[in-house]
Image (cartoon, rainbow, N blue to C red; front, top):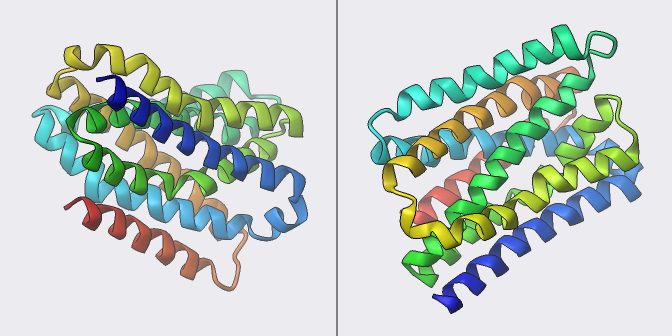
Length: 241
């Protein structure tokens, strides 16, 4: 069990490191990052939406018979929270909701990623490695997109870096650390519910924030980037089949 825990934690720390590298690159190489923000947004949207529909949602449906309700609840809760922030919290700066909502959705997803590492590595190292390969692929653009959306929401560079790190990078190893000791107590139905809620949040983030942002600032090869994200997602799903 000790070896499995260390391997799972190492994988989750690697995911957090890749996300952190993405945040660092977009902050300190801003001109390059800004020129390619639309591409990163499209790529991340392709990954997040496709992985949700092709893997997370079907998997959660297998694990929990009420998963469709949790999926709807995950999507609507993020939507209503967005409306609440816009109407009552961000009335003086509505754009800030654009950064906060994706940050919360991505943060919850990253936390669940850490739980998934615990589950898969407790089954076998091979299963865990396959999972890690799939998840790490989208960590770099995830860090960039989280930071960029926070910047566009009116946060300073320093605050955006810290919040992006806490939400997108730190939550993954945190999820592993918290969940692994309780792995035997996390039943299949509960994980299915969490996965379904996460999928609802991810679909909202990809379809409501990332893609519209890309459409407002079109780039010549944005469609290629979106298709690239979709094909990466297909690769992730096929590697696990």
